[in-house]
Amino acid sequence: MRSRTAEDARLLDLLDPVAEATGYEIVRLRLMGGDHARRLQVMAETPAGEMTIDDCARLSRALSEVLDAADPLSGDYTLEVSTPGVDRPLTRLKDFETFEGFEARIELDRMAEGRKRFRGELAGVEGDQVAVNLEGEAETALIPFAWITEAKLILTDRLMERGAQERARRMADGQPPDPHEENAP
Image (cartoon, rainbow, N blue to C red):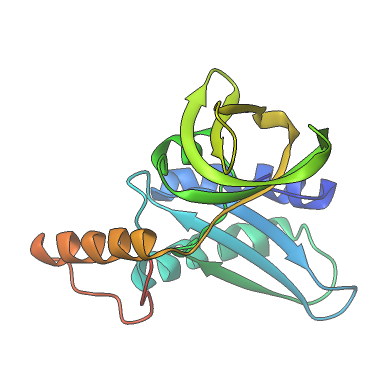
């Protein structure tokens, strides 16, 4: 889920070590657009789940150096490094643990119980399965992580409150507010 296509996966293999060496984790990488005016979107954060504008700029410079040297893409493209945002994609098993108790939409690569799309409250992880409390269901559903093609947090008041608390904590720690992060946790 961190990458969608084979080309995305190759780019992720190239850029993951750069991000890690710089102190960041790539949450998701997508190469979008056709043959012209493509955009390489990299969503990243620190291991603590934070990402400021300065962090985006720092990571963008590090990734640009490697992309310029390796030249893995033909034609023109724009590199866009950003935070995953408040209603972020859930792309790693640890994301489902981190955001336990929050609502999410999950899409599968196959049918399960007659459908591919689910919505519910995240209930953690059991082994390599994501636990979800689905609306109207008495038991917690276990979904194999390998079956998930897309997952995203749903913007709720509770999620917005968490973002506000995270910003307040960072400010109390002496970190200036990021004017571009508006609602990001």
